[in-house]
Image 1 (spheres, rainbow, N blue to C red):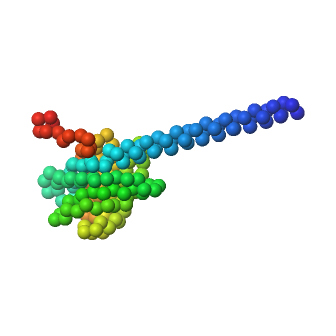
Image 2 (image 1 turned 30 degrees about the vertical axis):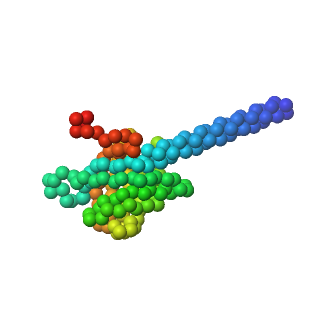
Image 3 (image 1 turned 60 degrees about the vertical axis):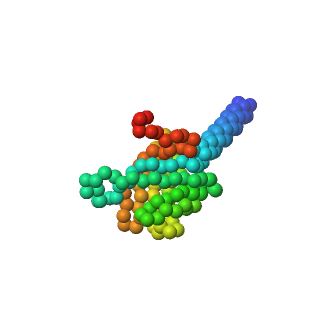
Amino acid sequence: MRFLMKSSMAVCALFLSLGAVVAAEGDDAAKKQEMLEKKFEKQMSGATLVGHFTVDGKSNGKPPREERYEIASVKKLEGDQWLITARIKYGQNDVNVPMPLNVFWAGDTPVISLTNLTIPGLGSAFTSRVMFFEGRYAGTWQHGKVGGNLWGRIEYADQKPETAEEK
């Protein structure tokens, strides 16, 4: 009987200590995620995405088109919702647009996800998935039946652009 009581107490103590370890790991993961989110918010506010995009089936041997998105601000709202205000040049349009978007995380990598978003002055049904990592971005885009790929580098607000001699 004593053996069973001691064994039961040992098992209970083991489960309690495992629960404390799991809770501590959960707290560490939440702190790490919060740090990643603050870093993303700080780095992307004032950043410029400089790169290229393609239109599926329209290359005709031409190089990809250039694109440039100036990010005025990035702010986490609630859950996966973020407010990203960007200057968007698209066709003849040049507008600053606050957009509520989802940002999901693949480990330490943020991925912007928008589905059938209406952008005032530009239209509706914009869908995109764009990931950001190590000063670069890459993803896919869709506007109605037209879509393609996009990629480039991120120029951060506290970083001066490279001159031709530095490249």
